[in-house]
Image (cartoon, rainbow, N blue to C red; front, side, top):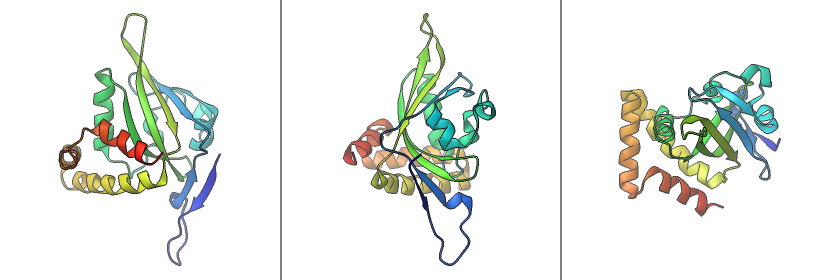
Length: 182
C-alpha cells in the first residue's frame, strides 16, 4: 500500500485521523462515477487505500472518502469544470474508512457515450510530492477559514482572490505546482 506515517501530537494519544497512508509512487488509484458522483468502479488500490470493500462503496457517493480538511470550494470548482466537459487536476486529501487519510494528485475527466453525452467521470490519482502538499495545505486552510465564516461561496471567493494574487488560473496553478515538484 505504501508507507504509513503517524503524525504525533506532543505527548497525546494519536487517533486514526492522524495516521497518514503514503501512496506508492508506482501505483495509480482509479475510480469511475456516474454523473451524480456515485461510484461505478474502483481499482484494487482504491479499495485497499479506502478501506471499504467493493460492495461497501459501489453505487455510493464518492464523497464517502471526502476528508473534512477538504474545502467545499475545491469540489464546487471540480464539479463545475467537469460538467462543462473539461478535465481538472487537483490535490485531494481523502479519508479512509478507519479514519486515516491519504493525499493524492488527481486527474479527473468526463466520460462520454457514442453521442458525445457525458455519462460519468474517470479519476486517476497518483502520489503527490510532499512539498506540493505543504503549499496546498496552507491554501486549503485559508479556504476552510473563509467557508467557516461565510459558506462555500466565501471559499470560492477566497480561492479566486488567491489565484488573482498569483496571476494564474486554478488549473495552471495546480499543474505548475505539480511540475515544480516532480
